[in-house]
Amino acid sequence: MKKLGTIWIVGILLIVLVACGGTTVTPDLPPEILYGEDVCDQCNMIISDERFAAGLVVELAPGKFEHRIFDDIGDLLAYEKAHGEEFTIAAYYVHDYNSKEWIDGKSAYYIQSEELFTPMGFGLAAAAQRLEAEALAEEWNGSVLSFAELHERTMAGQDVTEHVHQQN
Image (cartoon, rainbow, N blue to C red):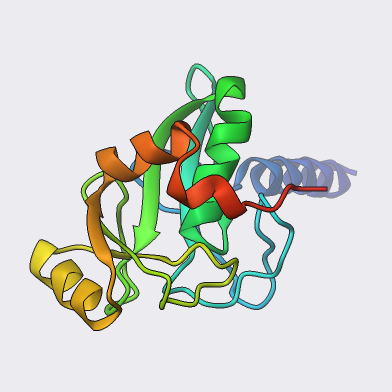
């Protein structure tokens, strides 16, 4: 009987540990995206090209963070414009176009070009370094924007969000 009681206690403890063992979301960790499986929080399309994938860390309540993931930098901005009053944005993440590494979205340099074909047609890519962004902008006949410039234009309804599709 003592052995059966011990087995029950160990089983209950294991269930509790598994239930509590989920990934903790913090502003200093970019989202994990399963390419070809996960869907964009704005348009519900499968995220497949990490060069253009982006993410937000949103704070829903003090100390409670969640990730939002996107297939296109423009979708991230459209999502923020549509839903930004529902939460506080704790961090922005984008991929460096060449290295495909996550970088801080606020310190990234953005290339905007009509010649750049992105998953949802926003024509935006990001680079960690300004010289890299300038080289890509020259290659694609585009322009380089800071996060502040891109964000301001988007929130004002200029350029990027003019061709935003609405989430169903």
